[in-house]
Image 1 (cartoon, rainbow, N blue to C red):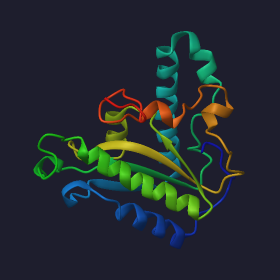
Image 2 (image 1 turned 180 degrees about the vertical axis):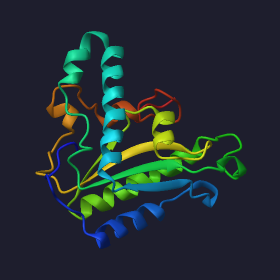
Image 3 (image 1 turned 60 degrees about the horizontal axis):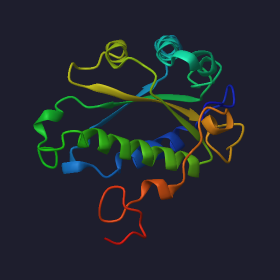
Image 4 (image 1 turned 45 degrees about the vertical axis):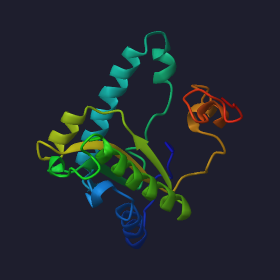
Length: 198
């Protein structure tokens, strides 16, 4: 979600339920690698928006021929949403080996589960949420005084929305089309269709 009802609020008890749902997410080795930073300072919100806007311009440049098309998209609702959260990977993650010895990225997978829990709970409460990933992680970490081994993963825009479209925004905006599930499921080996027998 990128469009939010202006000047709206999320009740404190609802926000507490959302964060509790996120905290109840499955996570590898019970490491609970998530940290949530609630942004309540308006000046800080504007500085985060400036970081995102800078990355939006850098992304447009990297897109080459699609730059202007990309710049026409609304890609975030940082200044409009009722609540702004930054989700980060915690410091001290290297001490957790259980489930991560060969797959250290399971800390990120666990944080993603927490974000998904928060997102689904928000929807059940009638709220919209958007995940903003257009930012330079070290710059955002510095802005929020994070420890050196912590890492921001997501800026989450949360709040009441005008409506819930029946398709992803990027489809509605003509940027891309989602592909059917059949293209993503294989049987027994990579690339073998589910009805394929060897």
